[in-house]
Image (cartoon, rainbow, N blue to C red; front, side, top):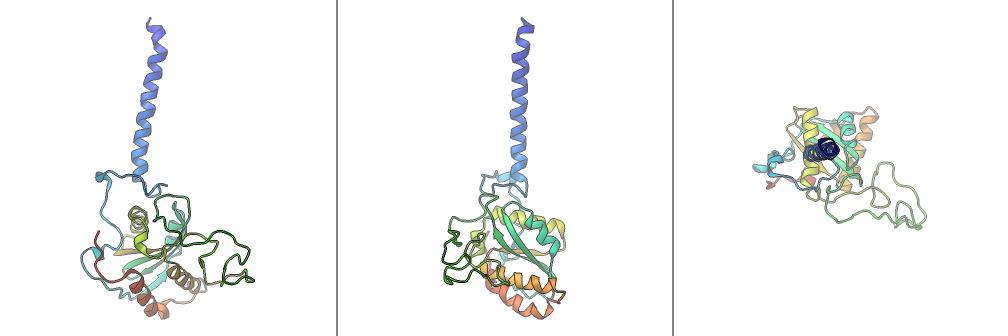
Amino acid sequence: MLRKLGFPICGMIFLLLTLSGCGENGREYGKSPDHTNFGAPVEKTEETERAYQTQQLYGPVTHNNAKLEYSQFLSNQLHAMNGVNTAIVMTTDQNAYVALMIDSSAVGTKGSTRETNNQGTNKGFYNDHAPFNDTMPSNDLNNGFNSYETAVHHDMLSHRFKQAMAEKIRTLQPNIMDVYISANRDFLNKMNNYAQESWKGHSLTPLLTDFNQTVTRVFGTAQVLP
């Protein structure tokens, strides 16, 4: 009798262990900074202290950065994350600023509003407004046609998406005081110009005033509630 029940009992034990393992992996999956569903429900106990725009939780801020550099290393690290097609990371004496393009390798990265026309129309592959011009300026990564997705305001990016990127930056470069993240198209293209200057071996110091004015406009100085 026991011999006959042996297989069903073993099978049930295996099934229970499998389900238990799946549940455990699911909990770890939800905590991973590189998971593919930033819109999945999160238990309250899994929430961590916000890692981006932290200074704006407590009051107005200023972007009076005294140094500016392009970080190829941090850019590569964010580029490898799910949901990120392109990442350009600028570091200052105290902060990190991230310009993004978003791909479809993760869900829950932003709202449903689409800003990019990916219909591939015949009038102009990169620009519907220039029917006979299929080129795009080399300084532009995105002009709104047949490209990856952008978001006009940083609030359109989901909290967990920004949190995952900010946590990765802080882990890799602990001296960073704050992290600012945007997928605004104009901001992305301008940071691409800065990166190109850095690739040419040029100092970004002459661009510092323009940079501070740009990030002040993009991220603001007023307090941002959590």
